[in-house]
Image 1: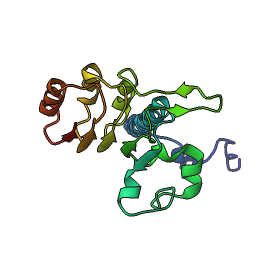
Image 2: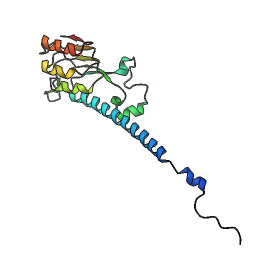
Image 3: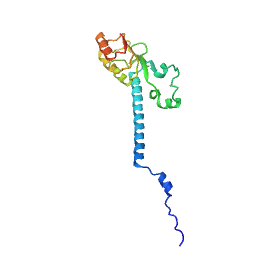
Image 4: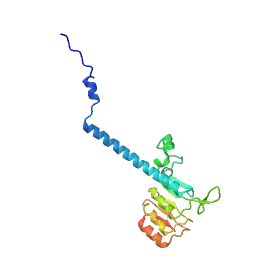
Length: 185
């Protein structure tokens, strides 16, 4: 009667390596869910910003991101790999701080029609730019009613409204909502 043959089952040390406790599994799941939540919010904010600039249309000849203000003259922020910025878009990595339209009340497309006139309805899209600090709305069709869309832009430092249909009363209401903003009217 010799020695019993070893069973074909894997050795205990190899089986143990693949075993996790329930607590470990819950921790890993929670960390993964938190990371996916952060990525989803980041993605949502980037899409919201990109869509806001696109929806406002062609008159925005001058769009400045935060990395431009910090002294970087390149078209992309240097603190992220260029291939990643090209793949996802600059809105994932930077905030729009300045919007200034091209001269004139609207842009003209190739067929000579006015496109994307800036009016009260288009100002609603500015909600997608919460970090916006400087905004020029000169010679646009903005009225007091459109100013309500600007009240959530709490980081706005300068707003130019010359040549618009905005009244002094509208400017005063907006100034109360944005006390740190200098409004030129």
